[in-house]
Image (cartoon, rainbow, N blue to C red; front, side, top):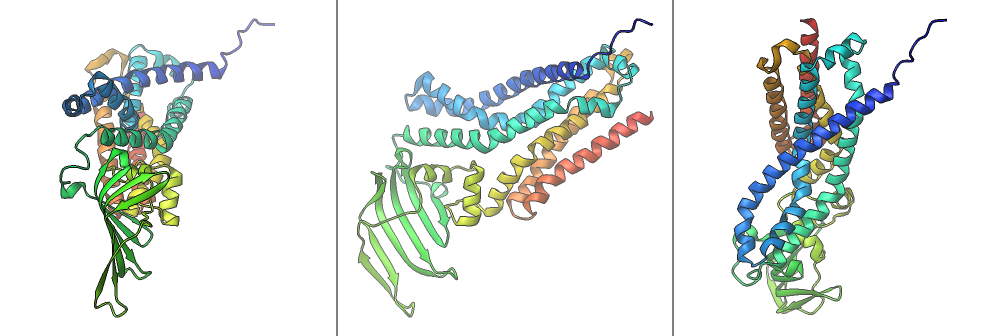
Length: 369
């Protein structure tokens, strides 16, 4: 009998590689998020201090804005972390040793897939449920701490318009975190979209689960649509939104949960953005793990760097440029999806598909050399 050492279990190699990859991803993510956070604070620190919120206000803004920034840089941070890991392993001849042991490039890719799934699924969950909650809390806090909200004339660009089924609502000013509204008008329309009447109130206050108007007026059209009847309104002024919903609608982006998106698209829930934007928000979260998998594929060519070439080889720069190009391309195609020019499923999948084709072509080309 010959004494033979049993081969190392495959899961030990998987654990070691993915632990190293996740560690470098976290490090790169912290650096990139910190840079973006500093840039955001450079813009908001003066207004925060003018509101006398102090250091606590700065920390509150940074903490609530952190999830949205983290999701924005997630694919790029993963790529930079992977680039550091694979470049280090290549230059230290670890990749050569793995190749000598029979590990192919597709096998190496499969070994790193657990990290892709962990980061991708965590990012999807955060984008669907953590980011909307934090962005809503940030918008509410920012509005509530503004002592001038609801007092001065509101710029035309800041007026909130939203729809709920056939009904349109215009809000001139928002204050107290959405609990106090000024210059509110409801436009009632029939099933064909024609205006049937309006309701207007000077102020609207939310207390005890109801909206209470002050200075309400009703405008209704005659049967032949030729005259307008103006009557004094009553206390039954109802807008189809709560203060929390109004603060969500006042945001520039579609920071909403899948349940809210479903209600907007299928049940006529309040919405302030085009329906295409909400579809993009829904499919964008689903495609995030695939984007990270494409980033890993685009990084694989660095394992073909000759160890003796060291950092003089420009391949890492090319890989980083390809990753940046993929991010820019995905952003441009997403803009077309948000505008409704492309269907949302197509808009979110074209970028990863082109990136995957580029990565596969690049790896095959390096294999032939």
